[in-house]
Length: 439
Image (cartoon, rainbow, N blue to C red; front, side):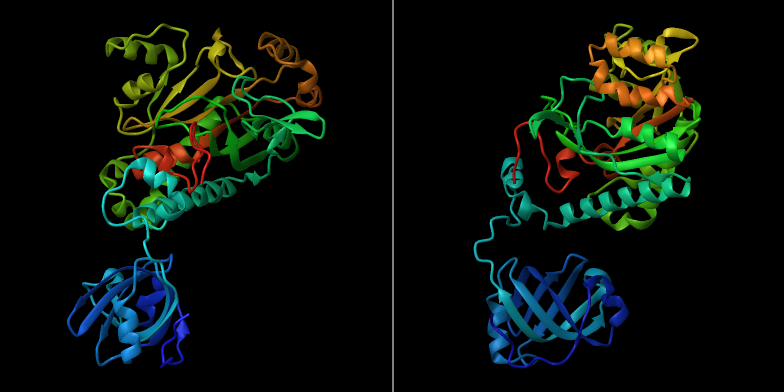
């Protein structure tokens, strides 16, 4: 460690709070982003995770030792600085520091990520360092706001957070995308969804939700897929499909509005066209699956009734609207075994997907769950699943079964849409994809 000869006593503050300390001498701890010199004045910018601060040091303002330390600062060197804050509308955050002293805690020679252009593979290999860039920090702040919005909204609607297990004994949505692991001599699987457990919790508590990671062993390389992703999954006893569609709409309106209100600066950093978000108003359009098929055909998209929509199909449908759109009543054959049949057409289900505009596709999937024990038993057989693994789930129909509904909303896909990101790999700090397990 190299230390300033003069270390005036000063209060340690976060850069985000600097505007409230103008006229005071303070201490800031952080990392150098860049430095420049103009003869007898040196400038450098420091970040501390909450913001960035420009620092100015005149040759007469600091000791000769500190002057030399500043002159040798490299990108990402860790430092402690002390000085007086003053207002400057040209500086980041409209505040700059007149430096009085500096400590260099550690240097960072040869930092691999420089201001020049780097390829995606290089940046992903150095994801642990790429997170330090302004863009990645902005994305993670928006992500945190989205998650906080989800939780605050659900809490405000009277839903209780209940944690679902990560290790599960059986599949939730199909056996082909399960990650299997050994569990003390038995087979266990990483959770695809917490939904079945939330259904059980809803029969105890009425309105519940979980928020956590889910795992799908899908061999997909599209810009919309991650192997490990995060979902929020509410379940609502006595609710119908119409009830949860209304809940989804209120959730999205609240989340978009809150991000616009609290993270507009970060949206600017990622160059998001916020006018598109400002046009998101309710009520959102709703189209029946049959209508969606007709729209695809009219748009020249080859599609056969009875199939599920692919990414291109969702893009074609969603491009016809400026807001999210609900597609309802999908064929039962393309939905999970627990979906309630549509009384108007038993080939269909009381299901709903919410498609985000601008080509982002499905961000929410949900619907009404089966309440009949006999029908659920038949569907488990039809899907080739073991009855024994679902006896506990069938108990929910044996003891006080009621209509109930819920949905799952993906954090990463929702964030990609709100922030206008091209690929979900930027939506989480350490993404897990088909060909990437590290760092």
